[in-house]
Image (cartoon, rainbow, N blue to C red; front, side, top):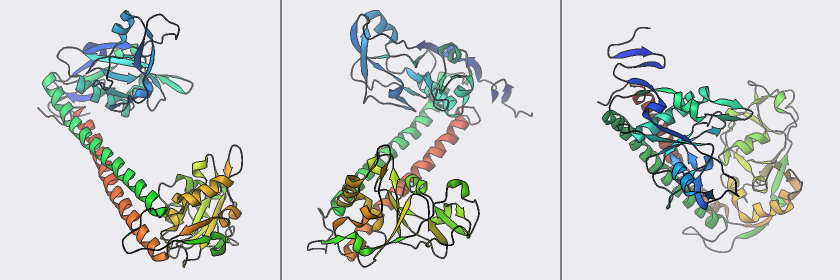
Length: 423
C-alpha cells in the first residue's frame, strides 16, 4: 500500500511519521476497581460504577456507598481529570468512558468493573478520554475484550497492553482534545435545548388536551361524547411477519410497527407487504384512520396508536393484533386523533379496563365505551396546529443534532488517526 509523505505504515494502521504507537500503560496509570463486601471494615464511602459512566458523561443520580478503609479509599479514589472506563459490559458498550470533572460533591472511589486511567506528566487526559471513546465506538475495545456469556470484559491488563497512536507532544494532544470538546459542548447544548422543548410540548399537551388551557378565540364547555357512537371498526388481518413480503401491492400494518413508531402519525412507505390474495377480504385504510395495538407489555402502551397519513392511492390494510378505527370526521378531526392517546380521560379509561397478566390488552368494546369531553372540530384543528408546530421545531433541532453528531464522528476519524493535523 502506498503511503503518502509524512505518514508511515504501522501494525495499527497508517499514522503520521512523528506519532508514536505506544501501549496505554506507557501513557498513564491504569487501576482496576475492587468489590468489597458489605460487612468489610471501614467507613461508608461513595463510589461510582458502570451505571454512572456514559459516553463522555458522568451521571451522579444514583451513587452508592460501601465500606472502605482509609488506605483502600486512597488507592481507589478518583480525582478531576481521571478517565473512567466500563471494564465489563455488553460487547457493544464495553470500554464506554468519560473523564471525571468532580461531578460528585465529595470525594469518591471506583468499584469493580470500572477502570481508572490517570495520565502521566506530559500526557493530556482530555486527549486520552477522546482517544478511548473513539476506540470504544470503532470497536477496538470489543476486539480485545474477553467475551463471557453476555458480558464482555476489557480487563485492566488487556487495556494496559493495548497499543494506540499518540501525538508526540502534549500541545498537539490538547489541540485535538479542544476541537472535539467544542463539538461535545455544542451537542450538549442541543441535547439540553431539545429536552427543554420536549418538556414544554409535554406541558402544552397536558394543558390543551385536558381543556385546562384554551387557545385564543375558543370558549364554552366541551361536549361529552361516547366514542362508540361515532366509530366504525375495520376488518384487519391475522397474518404473521413470516407471511409478509418485501415487495407487493398492499401495505400491511403490524402491531409491532405501532409500538416501534416514534411519531403519532404513520405513513405507509416503509411498511412491509401482503399478497393481494391474502388481503382480498380486508378493509383498506384511509388518511385519518386511527390504528391501535391491541396488546402491550405495560400499561403505558395500552393506548398506543398511530393515525394514518399520506396514504393517497396506496392500498394499506391493518394487520395482526391491531384495531383499526374510523371516526366520524365531524366529531374527531384528522390530525387530532393521533393525540387521543395522550388525553387523560381516554388513556386512563383504557388502562382501567386493560386485562391480562403478562400482557395488557384492549379491544373494540373498550374503545367504544370511552366517554369523554371533546372540543369542537375547529378547536381540535387549532390544537393540532400548535402541537404540530412544536413537533416541527423539535424535528429541526433533532436533525441539527444528528448532523452535528455525524460531524463529530468524522472529526474523530480524522483527528484521532492523524489524517488531519491541527499543528
